[in-house]
Image (cartoon, rainbow, N blue to C red; front, top):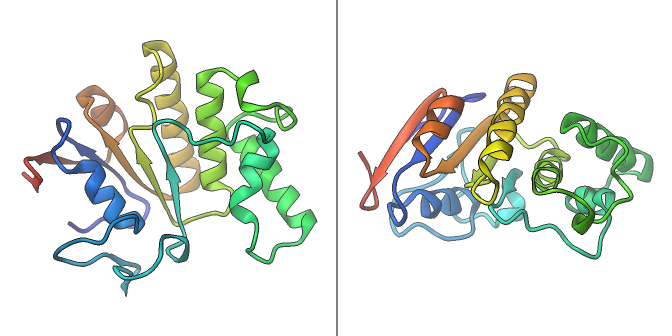
Length: 190
């Protein structure tokens, strides 16, 4: 499977079909038993996840409940050698991107599900990764919030030009968002 820079590709298929496993192999959370992962013509199969420069958004948001929104978003920037002012600027930009300006001092429990998902998006985008991986990021939201977040994700993709890899079992979601859809069944791309 080859994905072009800036493309929005969705992995679609039923539960257990291999979508998330493939995404996790790309992210470096698991090592594939065969094949390789190549990003920007560089073999990264054996590279640790934190060395791949990929953004990741999980279904359950994975926000730290004891941290503020700003602290959650800046978490991925620690250890990257950025100044305090550059970190603050990037956090502000990321929160602006997901339309959460003014929410920086709140904690996750003070936010709606859609707002929490936008914080997770901001955290994944704050260090400007060339590829954003999303594992069923809308799965925990109700229908109305899912529809709103689809619009937000499509807008972010259009505005950023970042490559998006999106996992879902929802055909409508895949059709609404994707440049291309990769259909999985029984652990294979069909």
